[in-house]
Length: 227
Length: 160
Image 1 (tube, helix red, strand yellow):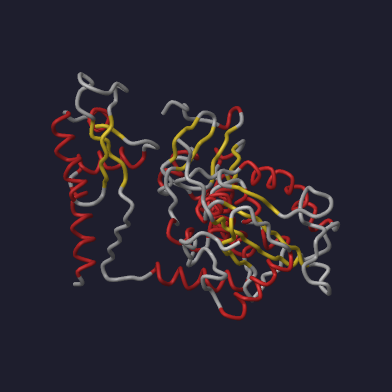
Image 2: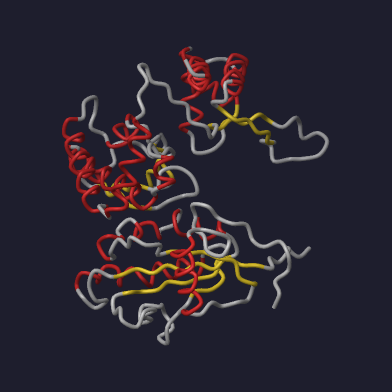
């Protein structure tokens, strides 16, 4: 076993504990940095237990930490700055038996890019999204379907934004191609989902996360924006 | 305290060959998006200047090659590579970028180049096309590069 495989397994092994996994999911799903108290509350554990597990996640390289004074005060009497947690940049992948879908996808993307087949890729993504939407099990609420696909949706005013780009490294290298594919896939998904009616997806990138944002008109929205 | 003023700015040029004339139905959506996308650039952090034709709104009536009626040029100056990158890939500009093949041919050769210019310099069409020629001839280097391997700004003051 290679050393990179070892380090990936060590990092991911830390997520084996269900409490830790819950804390990790809460932190990475939040659009902003998360403090210990908020993470403890979301995971339903004590502050000290949350602190212990959050630091394990930092040691494993899955989260990063910074310090911030929550009170907004500074100088003497302002108290100690709080530890704030956010997702670490690195990606960890391990596959048994070994698979290299990422290198295959880079090669395929390069060929599609060179051949100028953006339109064909978008059509394929739309069709795939539609059939996945129609076949979607375990709920047809677009928010939950996007969450299940790793987009980490969150409400930002009237817009549903996606905190995670599932195609990050590929989108970085082939931005126009892959972001166009992603938008078409999400549009297809909304078309296929019974509850997707009234939803509209569009390109609206923020500095981080997926470049697509969604809006639901009237009855389209089935979840509270506060969630 | 005054912010330090960069001695060099980043110039960029890209050319694109339209699939049909600018006034054709096929290009209508592209043309319709131009005012929004150009206004977005003008207000983008780190934007310095963009080339416009005699009409003054955009550069769509410029033809950088005499014998090619479908070739458009787009040239602009930015404070940094990051500023240009954020506008290109992390703004609403991405929505037209993702539809590029509805309007523009895929060019096999380099169609994009970046280079450093003394702050205040405004590249001409001929100068911009020279950079395209340079990157086609020599590949990416300090004189003409792309986002794939950006070169840092020269460290010395520009010789004017």
